[in-house]
Image (cartoon, rainbow, N blue to C red; front, side, top):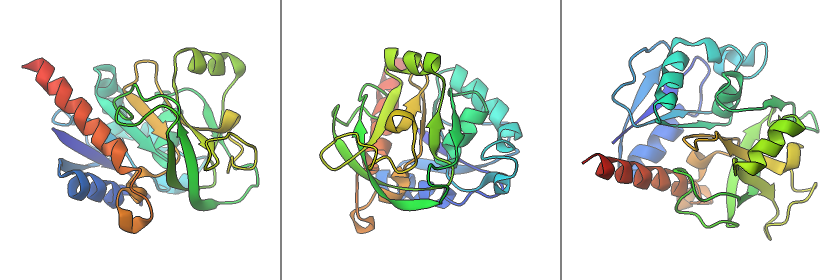
Length: 236
């Protein structure tokens, strides 16, 4: 199996993702330049955090037009796994690969700190090694992480179990005080209806080793690896 980490002008978490995949899981991983049009040899595509195109206009608004995004859409439509982290999540929203939009944080400040998350769905390729209701500790670093959508889309997200992570306190309780950006219903991550595209604001690549203060992010990478192994077994 092989991972691909996309690099946009302004990406700054690309090497963090590469390290987490290569050094922590031991799997193959290559960088993908944003103008690349051939991604046929990859099994999972990662859209990393950063400030693609300087966040001009709004976060992810320009990156959605990069040539690689058209190929990623086709890749996802064929069932390929795609994970967007922070700015990568914002790009997925702008590209229409996930529903909703990002607004500025409720306090209008850049927030950079560790937060607690509650796993809402462990039946996806990205969360299969978690337990439903498990509490995770992961860092965030963003100015526009205030997820929003209308009530119709929110109802569909709930009905289809597309809400994957919610911000919480260390006990797993959802409170306004523990929602760091004002996100609708404390949503920290969602997936598409088919469950092969995940967008999340917290950074799993920044907490994949104990030396970083948490290893909870490693389980996401390991879940992806196990899912791809199962998929490859099914092809034999």
